[in-house]
Amino acid sequence: MNTRVRINQEIRSKELRVIGASGENLGVLALADALAAAKAVSLDLIEVSPAAVPPVAKIMDYGKFQYEQQKKDRDIRAKSHVTETKSIQIEVGTGENDLTRKARQAAGWLKEGHRVRIELFLKGRYKYMDQAFLKERLKRFVLLVPEDYKVAEDVQRGLKGFTMIIERSGKKTEKEK
Image (tube, rainbow, N blue to C red):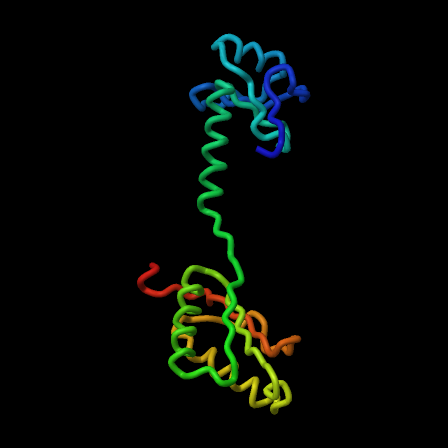
């Protein structure tokens, strides 16, 4: 949890919208009445929505509240997916079989949801070749990728050659649905 949750005497608001222990709405109560209601059932008064007008407080056990918050945070972390930018490096003289193998590898990364940077590495005299030819070589490799993709960053000239970044398109295949 990022913010400190106020309980019982820490609550500063004069009026609260109170939710009872079994989930029933007790209405808008003064702070003293809400604390008395929580004490009557020997539970805590927890401010669950301090930004609302009036703030919302719930009568429940604070330990149980913390457990539920930790559980929610764990679920959110488990469902979040961090995307990486994976790199594939090809050269002008790379053979067709190697290109298709690397294209399949890129497709696997795209399926996982990662972005793929494709680098056409230029060394020696390849650096001085016709730029239109080199760009076409890079685009020809991208066409070999068997997965649906969209171009995130078009062909750009870098220090060591040309780069292009692709990512998975929004469409999902029948297997993923």
